[in-house]
Image (cartoon, rainbow, N blue to C red; front, side):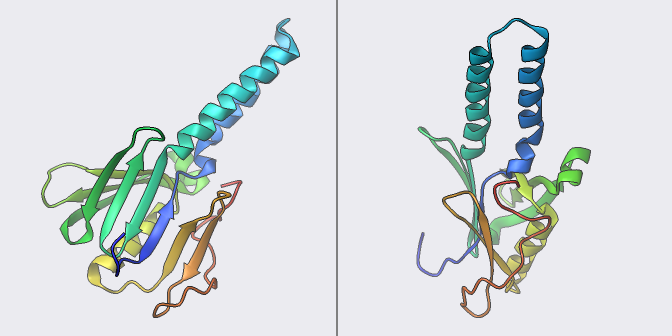
Length: 181
């Protein structure tokens, strides 16, 4: 990243966005154990494989917002990156299903002046309306709020940005973060 760019938001889809897959996986494994003669070791193996697939799906996405650009990266071995400069940003849309509203997550879509459609999508982020408002503040040059950093253990830390300060004094965005998010 170039000098002068401050990271405003950096995250991956929230764990709670994967909740339906996790709940479905648990239910299928329990039903297999109760109603079939499938051995426990096979059900445990299925649980591990499908659980790893759910975790891998989350790790495939990485979202970044700086004071200059918005970027979404997808992939682990091969990567695809979409970037929009803040100066070219035309629209910021939030889409939430009923389940996403209950979980406090949603999808944030970004479109630029150079395109008629949506170019970048952040899927399953926590408190998408707060993120949209933060981006509008960046566009107006008025942003002095939260900063989100993705920690290696998956726990998001939110920091107050006060004239360059990186002190951890800001409460988390929305309904919380961390391993259970």
